[in-house]
Every structure is written in C-alpha cells, then in structure tokens.
Image 1: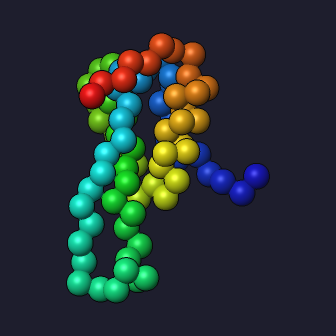
Image 2: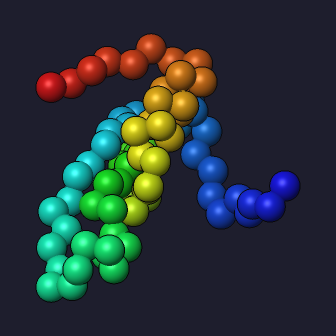
Length: 77
C-alpha cells in the first residue's frame, strides 16, 4: 500500500501517550523550515520512551490512536 512498518507498540503495552511541542527557531525563512516542532511521545509499561518527531498531522494522528485504542484514557493537565 505504499508504506513500510518500522516498529510496533501494541496498545496493551502503552502506559503513557502525549503530544509534545518543541520551540523551533532557525535563522532561515519560514517557508524553508521543515521541522514542525510537533512530536508524539509514547512510554511503554516497561519504561521505554519513543518519540516521533516532526509529525505534520500530529493532532489527527493522536486522535486516531486514542480513538481506536481498546483502553480507557485519562486527560492530565
């Protein structure tokens, strides 16, 4: 289908899942900046951390993962 699976974390192994914002500052015009500053961070039940960097549609990806997960999620402010 035009994509390649690089790694997998089963839903039952995810302990925490969060959005992270990075401050992206570069001395180049905005049109040339490729880094979105929007990341997704997964923490597994055994404490491993995985960060997906530069996720262009991060909010949509986050919602899809939460929406399809067979788990109860808690919002932490």
